[in-house]
Length: 631
Picture 1: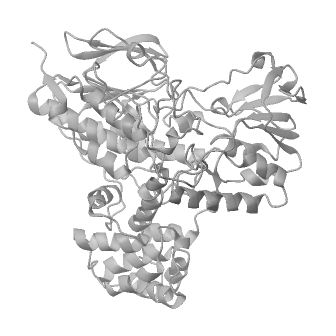
Picture 2: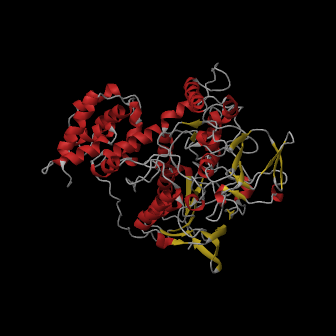
Picture 3: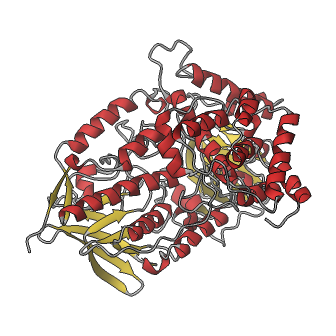
């Protein structure tokens, strides 16, 4: 620490007070600080605290004194006992944090003085244990890092030119994460230098690339190599994988196959009559390139989901006119940090104040994790109407509606169009990063009348109105339920994954292992979506904990094959499907991509983050059979 006390004190003014207070407790061991602040904290957000200014100033002064001291002693509470940690956790978020969360939070957050990226020495390779990973996005990079740590020789095949997955492919204006970045990162690779609270696509892609480089993953990746098929060889307990690469077709073998292709990478093109006849550009948001040019054009934006609320504000200043075609409204919530840059003082605190970053990440984890879980459960005795499903859900709906009314004051016509007809969280809740500002622009029109057909020069509505357009932007989502398509994956029985799943009914155990497909693990697989909170990085780490545990079971037994016992997957899916009936996604008013053609929810899971973490923390050996191929 080379800065003087006055500059340190200035930095601390821009840092959140609750994480600063928790850091001071660990540095000094003064537990009285907890009593001073606890009555003034009601939630995990900075705006949820009302700590008196004199108390906050005293905390910042004491921290500045401690950090500026040339002979600063070791932290008094560098290692927190579980009971004290739980007390501090509860104070930090203004509510009780149960004991079951403590091990999860220690693993994910740490609460330590060190924020460095540990590059563990590579252990001795496990003999005969080889793996192929398909995809080098968030899940694929996580898989490769964990396999390397576990001593498993690994090759990654990536169809694109670089790492990043969805963050490589999606380049539309406004593309950004809608989960706070300090939560949307690997626990083993914390990044305290995000420029924004919700960073743009380029920053996220750089982060994934940095992780791949730091952990030596890039050398394991073969780019511009798309897996066409994979077949399990019963005689040798190997996966035989056919790859189309820059030098043509090649065949590769490995003991373990891990698919990390994600759910949101095959665009869904709407089946609107005449769409192929449109004379101008038709571009899905996932296919946006550097040459896509909406400037000066009359643009039709089809869809009002997660991509639409970003690309619309991203292009509104460049287009001649923008018609937004909405099938159903979405719950768009106030997000004051959506476009804000992280203040210099907060950057400094994240990097320079011991323990601060961990406590800040914990608040995000809690706020964007299980805190809203109960709002998604249907109360069978609820009498508050079909627009909500329980008391908490109704209160959140009222708060969201007040935001709609405030943002669209004086525009009852727009308000009537945008208010959803389903309960909050029935579909993905969207962050307002300029959406309402865009709708209020003079050259923007929200169209809710049904689309009848696309013409060469525009769109005809059901009432006969023709809207002339020069360009169509499709923010229409992805073929999420059609998982692992178009790969041809054949299991031990000779049946393909499509034979088992069909086009839209994927099933797996814990979303990871699939009956009839030995030695196969699916990242971000069926029913792994975290519909109430969490992040895909958390999910990837949970799944890879489980996968590595399975590989350890194989290694300990000298096995070449691990396979789900008959009935394990079916039993899990029966329990899960029954539980999902009690969630908002099953509400009669909700029609979303979370459900397949028969109405079954295939995307989301019904568990809390702590439940899924516990389920995947280590495999149950009784769920599997372990065999060794005859030599």
